Length: 347
Image (cartoon, rainbow, N blue to C red; front, side):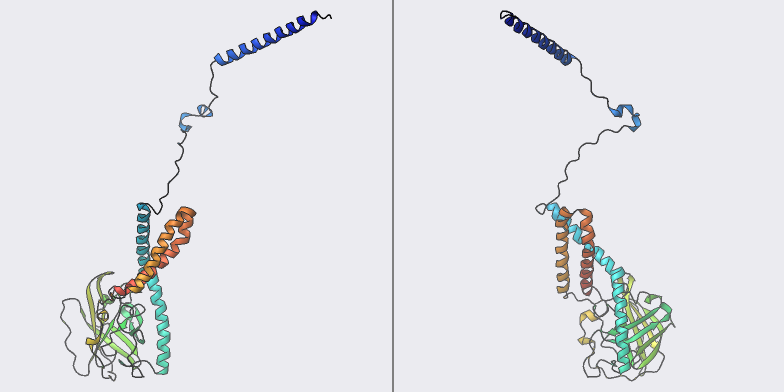
């Protein structure tokens, strides 16, 4: 090969490369001008009834915050629901359990007092002091309606939570004169819920520190009915009192009068009369001034409700409800229990 042949060789190589580049460009132009077809869709191979259109993308859920009014509306609704459910649970279950436990404890206390001969026989105890409210003083048995209750001294709303109560200005059962025992109709076990089913001639037995006394029903009175005839000297009468009408919606007061048919026990002289009784101790009486315990429990219920709404946005719905629902129900029941003293004592 001579020197004169070198340029020719380089020139020939450049011509070949140009030919190759021109061919590649031509192929690219043909590929670009060719029509493009989308890849086959697997859904097109399926029957029409099995095809489902794609779901639209989910929008992120915006949770309310304490700066929005609907956040506080949720707090209010949760608070109302907790109060309502707490009241229903208290009336149907918690109150019944509280009454049953109270009856057990009162019976044990009364049994000890009777064995020691220190149970009260009148308005004063063995030390000459007024018998404290809530002190067990006897048992009341009415077989015809299934009543077997320990009753206590006092008829305030708080006194009637665990047991029927003896009106403090009246004589003890079995003694000469009129003795009054009041009990709830529907709440806290409803010991007198079937009192309206009593009939003339039904037997009532009352046991106190002086023994067992027997009474027979002779009159059932409601609002507007005539009072029973005054007692003669040496006679005794038992008056049972409760709410009349539908449970939790009383229409008045029901009175059951029963005459003492057993021996009359010795009757101590009274030291006070009805004039010294508080309004909350009378039939359908309430204590509207006992609002401090209600406020105490209500504020904790409100705090728990606000905490529930705040935690819900961080834990999740189910986790929040599992943790907070028992707390809300317990606080709602405690608030309802405190509020019962502000409601009529015979409910």
